[in-house]
Image 1 (spheres, helix red, strand yellow):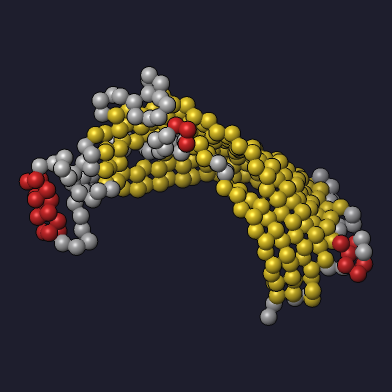
Image 2 (cartoon, rainbow, N blue to C red):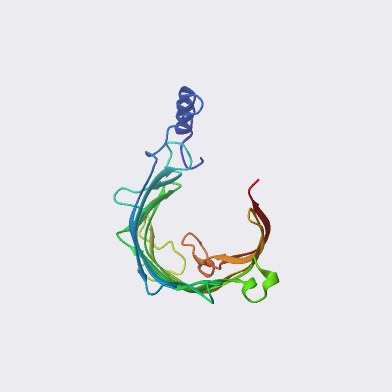
Length: 270
């Protein structure tokens, strides 16, 4: 508040007292607007009585507009504005081809396939941030690509050894390749560069490459026609990426988060 005259602060206090509780006067008109739409097509082809081919294609568009006033006063302390367009404007394509089948007299049920996703800027992604009266103009162009191969099967062990009838073993594995790329232009109110590692045009180009496995292992046993008991373990992950808000160039990329769980349970009709 030392950046502004004392009389202005006094006026804001009087204004807030007149408004009363649970109402504030802001320096802009806050809004959060999201538009999302897409289309998906699933095609199926029965290659034989035991093998099916599926193809899943998707296209999605996502737009977001956020305008806010974090200091909740009419002073230009911390604000986000967007005079035209959207803060985020993305288009995404996905394609998956999948084989499903049964083998060994239907005692082995399996699925295998490949997945790909590509996302890119469909328009200009930009925003204006006010920090203590000084504007920072940002514009970015993100690209996301992800590819994966996977397979999973469930085998009825009773087919190999009669006393194990009703006991099934499941194993699945997926390997994913992730790629993130971001072109970022960020300037302050005087035209200088405000992004870490920027060139003379205030342009920063960042990349991230990562690979991670996922898997599942499980046993389930049909104890009675109405009761199933099971134990399973899974490994999953959330992909790494790029944090464009980081002020330290060496810390813009962040690694994946992984999780490993074990679950024991029972499913039954009471």
